[in-house]
Length: 421
Image 1 (tube, rainbow, N blue to C red):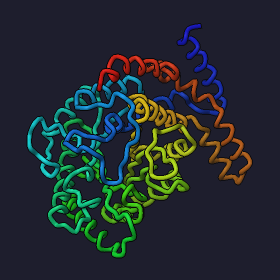
Image 2 (cartoon, rainbow, N blue to C red):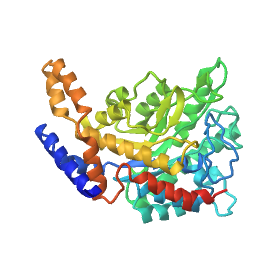
Image 3 (tube, rainbow, N blue to C red):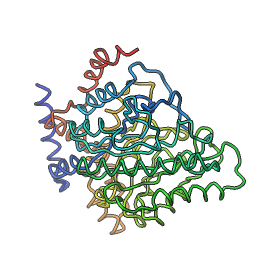
Image 4 (tube, helix red, strand yellow):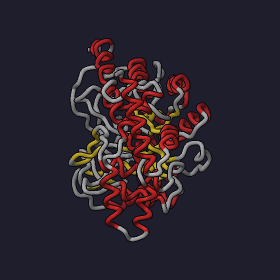
């Protein structure tokens, strides 16, 4: 029996199983296919960027030395193109400002314009992608230690305020050029290693800086702006200026998009439980999906219970039009293209899994107070034939199925990545 025949037979079986539960598999496939997931460019070169940083600073660390890291725009886009051939569904590409293509021009982050990103716009058009964007408030000589927008050094603070303004303009340029919104996400590593005794001073300076950046409300429809929190980072273990409470409060007060990064909370916190709570108070949310392990660590996204619950919250509460989904991880200990493929495929599987779940029956049981049936359905849901539907979904889009994509990555490693020294 050929692989295609086996896949089609598996899909026919899955149709019967899901059909008995009243689930329209074709409608689920179409809905899963249409929801964009934004793939982060920085996995391909270990967050190095192109604007001259020779090391990572600002609470970020990437571990591992797997061969084949992209070293320039050409190599990075070649790797991204190959990764996209392994990933089904609507996709965007998420850029950091440090990936500006300056082509010898002497321009710094406070002076970046759309010109420094025109090669990325051309690439996105060629690949049929939207673009999202992030100011880069780390790995730069104008950092005041681990401080940017909250620095007491007025000159350095002003540099970063201008960077934030320029990034908003660039995001709006992306949206106009590509005909779809560009989410501009602000994450600042600002904080202190040891006990801070005047937390309000740092937060007052941060607020004044953000107020300047967002004083102009024009363009927020084209380029929604999000504010991302963090529990702590390397070198800022004791105090983080933009904590969850600060970021969420500022977003609500100022009509911005709230960003929840799944790697930026205590390991015992479930971000899935925060989604519907936060969405009661903001118009839109950005989810940065990663996998925390022990502490703030952005591991490759796994198809685990928390990922599935996050996608359930989005789909079951009909939040698809109000929630932006992007991935954020970096692992230099494994093949970087494979990391993209694993993470992006898992995100799409979880979306499909949410759409194929017996959500109606689960909610009916809950509303009736039949918690026995609710638990039974939740457990039986785990063994429904999602994998058979996934393989068929990949087949009809010409994307390699599970078990077939990794050999292609290994071949690409031999022909391309292995030649990089």
